[in-house]
Image: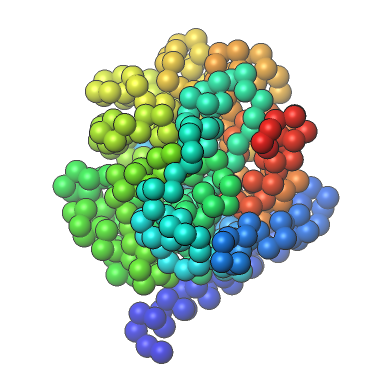
Length: 389
């Protein structure tokens, strides 16, 4: 073995060891056990060919995939999101590499545009439950899809397809814009070595869309970076999508793309309170796109959203998972027509832990441990009498 294949294998091994080291020291389940595997679904969500998508251990919250010293949703001041994107462990399997239009999970045409949900439901339409604060249903989002180090890279077609097949309600993906003004799916710029070997250290904003979409995602030899329009085409009729636009200067182009593809009912943009207040109002078409507003740990921003900004398209507010919501949801947020969201980046987050977040007042929980997130959602919806759960 030599060259790139050897380097890919070395990277996978290093990532797996890093995750294993973190798993033993940073997270304990609510009952005090250091290992959350007792709460993991048996083998994860099975896919059609008998392979499974198990839970993904993730790297620490100070890591943007591997290390994140404070990556923000944009360059705007204040209300920054520490993304905490993390690589899961490699103890999961999928059917291998996939691209939009291919079968990613072993079923017949799982990735084809023709394999759409029959009719709109909460998975495929923001008009159903997502934007209705009286809806009792809780929902689960796959952060970067349902991904794993070995075969379904973060943000990849395979990870997005696996999230759909695994029963998730939506996916979060990252958006940047190329030098020729095309929105693409990419977390980092410059591209990190653990994201792509052939495009390491290249900047998305200095590349054309053709160049970006030729970059391979580690460790795959076929999974490449995607255009946003292709991903939106696949997701139509299947799942809603959270767009984490990494640069505030790219909001306008992303909004334009949402309108071009008539994706207003299933695509929403994540941003900060200050961005919603100071940037969005001046952008063409911004008044007909939905927004998730990240307030972090600042509960006072609820008053700003409700009493000052008063943007009817701000349908959901995000808080850090350790924030005590108290009665804010029932007294302020829901009555104002908004729902609540959190992203849990803890490695091996157990079903019990994720279920606790739902029960603490979060309507939507985004996690890297997709199978556990889905089961936690099922448990809570069943307890509430929501059918199907």
